Length: 355
Ligand code: PEP
Ligand code: MN
Image (cartoon, rainbow, N blue to C red; front, side, top):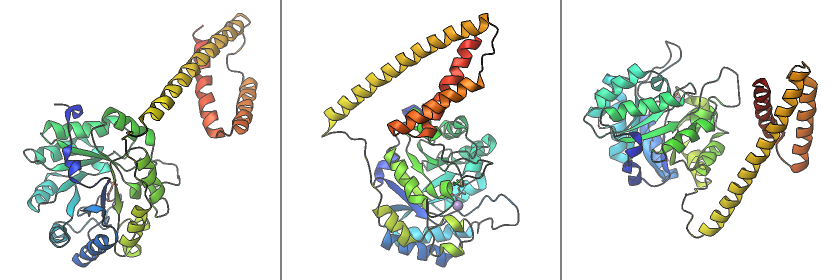
């Protein structure tokens, strides 16, 4: 069996989109129960309660999670408020303890996904169970590692799988804590349309302001759900305080989300018409590019015959300025046009180099 054969019916047992919420970390029984109670009241769309029991921290001596005792609190949350529960597991001991405590959904954290030894250990500890396991993308932008982790779980017979897109580390400071790199997640989604993909706006943003835009963007792209860190008193949270929101803010955020679905019934014909038009335009684009490359090749032959360097910075400047001007005139983003032209120019240089 391969990842392509999975049906992943588990997600159909939940209201769509699947919303998972709860604190970054379990801190105390009171914090867990208060958060759960208020989520139940303010955000009834939430069906799974999350809390980290073991916390991977960049530096030692920080708060590394309450450990096993937190599993009892998750159990209480389930009993008192009827949520399914979810926590992160990072080794075989965590898996054993979480299975004993009847946690419903386990997730593999972004740091663990980077390490095949860790994933293998987790997968082997899960063998023989029918747990639902969500795999966060690795911290580094490596699609193969993400897929490899899911394959390791599948190889041990775990068939209820999902993926969490939590963004990727960058050394440069950006407005995100973890850059979304949507293309990687979309490549994942294109390869495995049947594996539910869930967005984690909290770890992408690292702040509260950006959450709803990221969640909305993911829903627009056809994601199956979101996992959002929610805390009864976010400012005082023991981990990830800056990105956590109250249950009431969460309720509001969910209310404002627009849910799209991929069912085109009702306007089938219109979509087909537009898509045909797009295909036609794409074909024209490709033909024009082919023509452009042929002209480029001719220039390349002239340069070669006259011993002129292929890359001419002045000419490149003229091209980019012209493109920027045309971008403005047609109301397109300059950055986008610049990206397109960089790519075209790179290929032209390649073509001329081959002569
Ligand atoms: C978390 O969900 O609290 C967490 C530690 O996430 P990640 O593995 O994505 O950093
Ligand atoms: Mn967190």
